[in-house]
Amino acid sequence: MRIAMWSGPRNLSTAMMYSFGARPDFAVIDEPFYAAYLAKTGLAHPMRDAILAAQPQDPAQVVDELSGPVPGRKPHFYQKHMTQHMLPAIPRDWMSEVVNVFLIRHPARVVASFGAKYDNPTLGDIGFARQAELFDHTRALGQPPIVIDSADIRRDPEAMLRKLCEAIGLPFDPAMLSWPAGGHKDDGVWAPHWYGSVHRSTGFAAAEGPLPELPPDRAALARDALPFYERLAEVKI
Image (cartoon, rainbow, N blue to C red):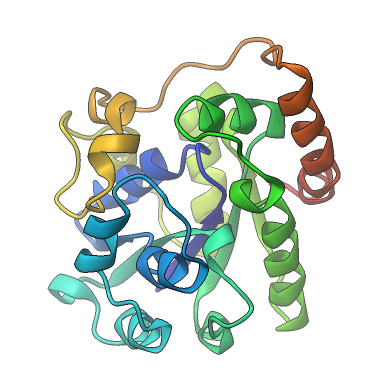
């Protein structure tokens, strides 16, 4: 089984990769289209040069890697993807060969967290519109899209991971509930900038409190993203 997990940034996506990576039957890959995205957009992301050097910049080469032999000859392959990386020029035909899952988080929380590490974020940077587009693409492929909310996972990790495994036809493994501190061997080269809190973790963080208060410009960005989040949240597991 190959699982493509689609989320925006600051969305529990790394913890979910660690969760699946803790299973002995899974290989994982971390944001394989990141270098291709930076090469095509020219964006000045943190650690840009290191990312461009660490990954293929040709999206066709990335697709070959995602569709080829599973690393380590594992039975299953978990692919952590950022929705904003999927520019129109990046192929999507391979998505018909994987189980597509959509990981969502309330945009106010995403904007607060992402904005703390990236200046002047835009709607395109946080991936909500592209996530909805990929959701529609998956439905057009004839797949019933699977949606899971990060807040629900943090509220009750075992119950939600059991639901997720059932939805994708995979036995639940208790190993998914914890992992060693210090990161994963398959972390992207950008991990030192973005993964500090999850590197200190050994499991999912506790349930979140009230939504954060945002300054006016960030609040406007969250409002712009909210309809995309709400549309997917209507069908979450």
